[in-house]
Amino acid sequence: MLASVAQLCMGARRRMELYRPDPADMLSYHNGAVLHGDIAVSVLWYGNFKPAQKAVIVDFLLSLTAETQAASPSVAQWWSTIDQQYLSPASAKSNGAGAKTRVLLADQLSDGECSTGKSLTLEQITALAATASPKKGGVAVVFTAQDVAVEGFGMGRCSLHGSDASSGTTHIWVGNPETQCPGACAWPFHQPAYGPQDAPLVAPNGDVGADAMVMNFASMLAGAATNPFGDGYYQGSSDAPLEAATACPGVFGNGAYPGYAGDLKVDQATGASYNCNGAHGRKYLLPALYDPSKSACGTLV
Image (cartoon, rainbow, N blue to C red):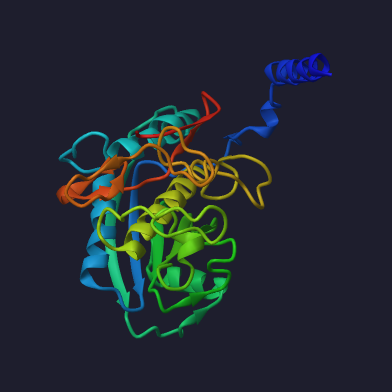
């Protein structure tokens, strides 16, 4: 009996070693447009945000292509990975040149009175994004405050990105999950809604909501840049694609597995966990990125 079990285990292992996924099932380029060059980001703050919360998110944006590089590993290195592995190769195919892509903060608007109400549909999110007047090839970002409900928020959705092909613009929505759905959208800075209830990690900027928003925004920015109109880089169905960051769910550091974010850096002064440095001494936790050339998730640490 033991010999039979051993033979079965060896046979299963051998089959796994011989298995090669169909390239059509891997994350790949579908010959569509990506964002490249200077990506102008127009921000709409919807609802009441503390100045400190805005500063955490704005500093992340400024860190993406900062002229003064932060200590390694950095936010700029994370963005450079997207540029090198996705944007430059795609733009080189279509334009014959792979110029460096930068993210630039263009405008900021505030709607602290919540003119459209505090319970929004996805159609209203799209309409709000349009009020930010994104430039062609740019991105409008709608950040909603913690007391603003959005259709599907915390029920399989923490953020999203969409586009208007006719105007050549894209938009992103990210909600503050701290009070509405921290278990679904703020892990690992909050205990997960399901699974092992290990102690949450300390947020690097001292604000669970803002730090989680950066984490989710980064994931959507990676998707919007590499698959803005649904025919860029993705895996699976174009209606529900896995993209540069969403193809690596829950992975933030080396050795990650479900329920464990990975081996992260720890700030000795605060005990906060992070994996990269940003502008003005900031620290952030950013998602792993799928490396198409290796068919694997790559992390900063």
